[in-house]
Length: 564
Image (cartoon, rainbow, N blue to C red):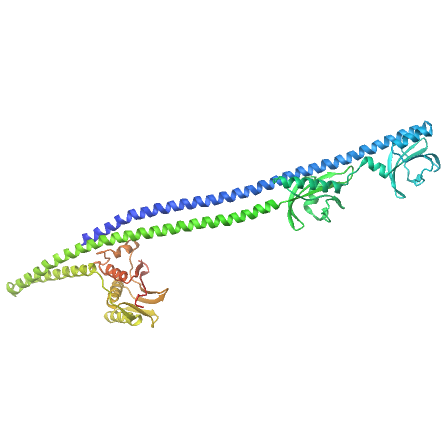
């Protein structure tokens, strides 16, 4: 019979090996798919992040180009103004030479008109008007305001804001040419910086609308340490350079830089460029560019991140459900195949057991007749061996009977039972049987708990388990404790039997459910398999947790019966 038990164990291992291998392969495949999904998710996030950085760099590069363009326009405008001023200086000098050479007033006046010079006059060092063309030269200019230099100087006099004056001191006289500002501006046509900024901003914005890669300009400002020199129309005030460390440090170092800041409650990319206006102190050209596209990309990145995460999480959940259901179905099929196989083995075992049982009965009857008819009281040795033979026949007959019990289908007689009374009676039986020993059985649970099960079948289970616990104590052990706990949770009744005996080693824990496997010297290896079969018949489960250090814990879980 031990050989039969060995064969069943071997069959279990053979059946289990391909299943475990297949499960492991599926698990590895799902792990690889999961890793691929995570890598794909990470790569998509990386691509989105890279796109944002690329757009950001493009906006910054275009902004720097805009600044260079603005700087060139400003410098060109200032250069044009210098050229026009030089032209007026040359015209004034020509007239002065004509006057000094005493050309006729008619010739000089004709040239004056063509050169758009309103008046030309000569004033001596005493302030007297020596010459005037035409007559009635303005006396708004006082000699105290006039420099003594042959170089031409351009002056604006507060008393006459409608004119500008070109002055030169020669031959102890001041030569003063006045030009109406409207004539001066008709040639110079100066463009105010704010006008330049507004027009340039509008032109760039109109181009940006048609070309998506170009950024929109939010503002354009020239600013020095005192405040704003010029700006686009939408700028009313800006933070002072001295109160902004970023601006002051880059103005001092004369470096081009950029940063993210806010303007009119919107984020902008500000690029600054220090430069100088003629001989004045360095100023800052500040350009604010819209980064709405970047903000939109960031929002889209978050949205895509959420969508991808949901999709990938869904795929992973589906993977897990597929794996769990596949394994569950596979194990059910395996259990059915194993059950069918074991049913065949059981049927064969029953037939073999019946065939063994009949000869055993015949042998027992023959030995009884021999002992009754042919053995006298004098044959003590023979009687002894006959007694041993009877014992072995009885033992063998008991094994056959238990095997028949195990292989026979279980028919349950379900009834309503008070669990506290039921377990209490079993505990009392063992307390009485082992009252001479140091055995203590503690029962804990809800005394009003009522459940439906087969009393005789579950009695057999608990007796088998408690008996194993009692037999697990070593002879010299003191404080032999068995605790039985029962409770209801999630529509299941749980019974725990815990002892502090010698326990079972991990390599033997799973084998205890195998037929004919026993850790006891004279055990038959049927107690726990039969107990498991009874619990399975109640649609329940039975587990074992054991350690050679702390003892053994048996857990029984039984669902509510359909009769409830």
